[in-house]
Each structure stands twice: as structure tokens, then as C-alpha cells.
Length: 271
View 1 (tube, rainbow, N blue to C red):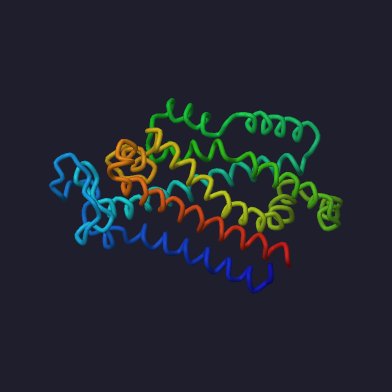
View 2 (tube, one colour):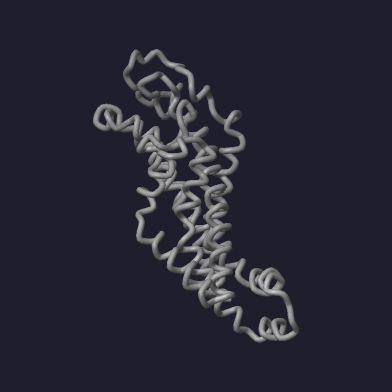
């Protein structure tokens, strides 16, 4: 792909992410109704899209558009915060493993391999069942089950950096390992970490939606996209819009972070 194409990819992805952030921040101003209250007399049946309710209403008479707008807050908060936890754990383990090597490397990488063999969704379900669903527990759990790929990539990059001349020179001068990592290795690994964070946020968003769909996400009445799809499963034939619109919202968010991350990655490779 040409440099101009890469630039467009970054711009499109960045604009889409910015739009999601704006919707999340200004949800009280953008949402036409309270997302947790019945605003239409549907008498237990979903209301079709109309001028007053562009995305229809659910079986409880709540405005679907308002719930999707407020759901952006939860999805963005969980996605970004969980990715911060993921990056923190993955970078720490990757740096220690790649820099010190030996028994430290073997121990940490074998632990990482064990974590990789466990399905992330099943592991997250087990953690949530123990901690009980809440916004804090969800983002911590997603972070705890998503760090393995980050750790392996950071380890590989750290192994390369720790053998560079400027690191070997600093080590020969007696620099403390902590100083070597903080001043010489970590700054050179950070660009790769930023790319992985952008790409990985889409995975945390999907994992959050999956947990919400299974009833293990942020508890109601807080609107989340995954729970909205779960609540719409019995209306797939009679009211398909109940699942379509939150599904499109998830698709939009995942696509936005993937485009941004892929654009940044490709640009880094061409430089």
C-alpha cells in the first residue's frame, strides 16, 4: 500500500475513533431520551423505527438509539481501560523476560504459554463468576486474560534491543538494570506497544460484548451493546432491529480501532 493510502487509513480510523469518543463524552446531550426509562407505550412488544424513535424501542419501551449512545460510554471505558491493564501486564512480563533471560525468561514464558492454552472467554467467565460482574471487575478480568500476545511481542523486541551497542555500552559502564530498562529499552519498545494497544482494543471490545451477551458484563440497568443483543435474541424474527443496531455499533467500534492500528503499524514498517 502506498504512503498516501496508509495516511488515509490512519485518518479514517482516527476520525472514527474520535467520533466514538465524542458520542461517549456527550451522551447526555446526544441521547434524545433516558436510556433506562420507558418512553413509549409498547405494552411488552418492541416498537418499530419511526420519526420519534429512529431505531425503535425495545420490549420495555426504552429508546434503542439512546441506549446505543450510552452504551458507547461503557464499551469505550471497558475497551480502553482493559487495554491499559493488558499493556501494563504484558509490557512488564515481556521486558523482564527479554532483558534478564535465563531462569526468569523460562519461568515467565512458560507461564505465558500456559495462559495461551486457556480460552480467553472461558477464563474471563470464570474470573467474573468469582469477582461478580461490575465495571471494575470486567475491565480487570479482560486485562488479566488478554496480555499474553503483548508479552511475547515485547519479549522478542526486548531481546533485540538488549543486544544493541548502546545498551551493551551502558551495561559495561555499570548502569543498573532498572535504569537500562527504563532509559534505553522501554523507549524503543513503546512505538510497537502503541500499535498493539490500538489493535488490541478491538479485541477487548469484542470480549466485553461477549461477556455482556452471556449475562456476565456490567449489570443492568446500565446499557451495553452486548446485553442489548442478548435481550433481543427472542425477537430476531419479529423485531430484528433490536439486535441489528447494537451489532452495527460493535462492528463500527472494532473497525475503527483496527483501521487506526493497522494504519499506524504499516506506517511504522515503511519508515
